[in-house]
Length: 136
Image 1 (cartoon, rainbow, N blue to C red):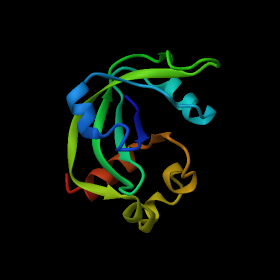
Image 2: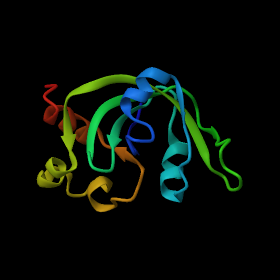
Image 3: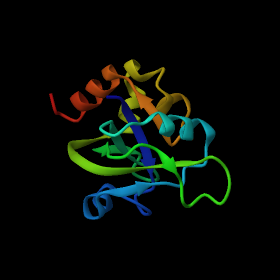
C-alpha cells in the first residue's frame, strides 16, 4: 500500500462532499507530474485529503478504490482518474503553516512544490501528520 496527498478546492469538492458522494471519481488533474503519481495509485492506497484556498490544511483521509483509468473529462491527452471514498476525518486539521514550521517536512513536495496537486507521502510523513492531528 502507498500513501498520497491529493489537493482540492473545498468550494469545488470538499471532504464533506466525498462523504456524501462516495465513491467518487477524482478527475481533472492536468499536471504531468501529478498525473504520473495518479498512474502509480492502486486500489487500497490511502491519501491525505488537503483543502486548498483559504483553509490550506489536511482535513481527512481517503481511500483509492479503483485502478487508474482514462479520465473521461479529458478532451485530449493521456490523463487518468481514480475512484475514491472517505476513510476518516482527522481529529484536528493539520495546516500548511504547521507543516512548513516542522523541519521534518522540509523535503516534502507539499513544501517545495506548492502547485503540485497529487504527491506521494512517505510512511514517516504519514505518521507525523497523524501525530500532528492528535491521532497518536
